[in-house]
Image 1 (cartoon, one colour):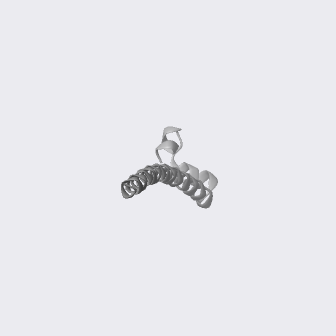
Image 2: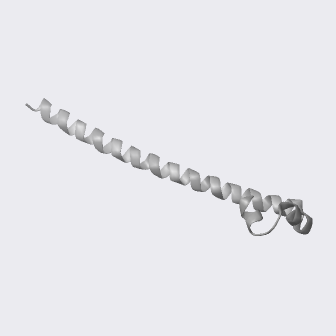
Image 3: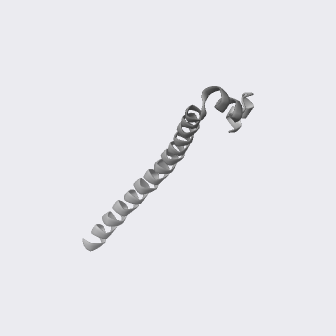
Length: 70
């Protein structure tokens, strides 16, 4: 909503000019894009954590194997 009002356009003016369904489609597209971006960031962080955990588990397995060989 801030983007629309900062450009000098009011939501009521947009609805009056374009119509309610068109304005709502635009707002919902913006909302979906924003949520998808947030989701992508969270997935990237989780992927990094998973890769770090995998590396640590591999090191632990190697250490356990070397201790069993003694």
